[in-house]
Amino acid sequence: MNQRVELVPQQDLATLGPTVFKTERNQHEVRCGMCGRIIYVPEESFGFVRDAINAGLDDPFHCERCKEEYDDLYYEG
Image (cartoon, rainbow, N blue to C red; front, side, top):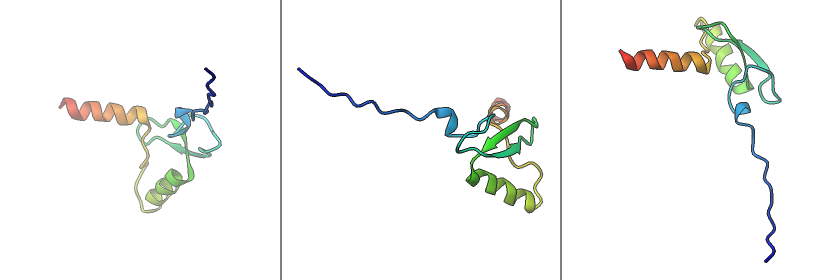
């Protein structure tokens, strides 16, 4: 029995969201408003952050690590 298997390369999950390094998709540098860590985001996210800063909001972006810590503290009490 012969079966032909087509290998489909899977996208690297790290490139689907913000990254700590530049990727083909994540070219724009932003700083986390909580920890100050530099994160690279795609154009859509960068546009949101830029618009928020232009509207007067301070540091509207939070990295995944800080979001998780904030959520943990919120649910604990």
